[in-house]
Image (tube, rainbow, N blue to C red; front, side, top):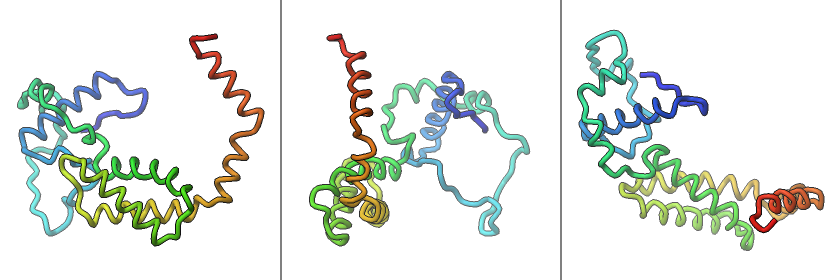
Length: 181
């Protein structure tokens, strides 16, 4: 089923597709935290694939066999659409961009701190990832930030983004949106 997901896509169609997906997931007792990014290759010789029809099902055809109202009542995991890996990566990288500036630690110390942060965020998920996946996410973030965030690169970033002209423009923009002006 192809559903347009571009920014100009129909919100109504996206909500309908999401309701069908949630209901299908519920009916099949599937993992609601699956992000949909990987699957088994149906062309691999290991798998026996049954094809019941050549054309793809439409959303309406699938919806005919599902209770879409049940998916509305069910509380949906807020990390469902993005996936647990992406959620942990985003949360941790945002933390890391600030945290690395607190003393510019050696890589081994930094790696351990980042992995601990991923594991902390992971523990709050309804269905946590494995520790191996947490370590992989943490290692990726730690390597990138340690290599690219240094006192020199941060000083250059501040110099490039905090000139008097830029700061004045930010002040004017903020002042025009303020209720006081």
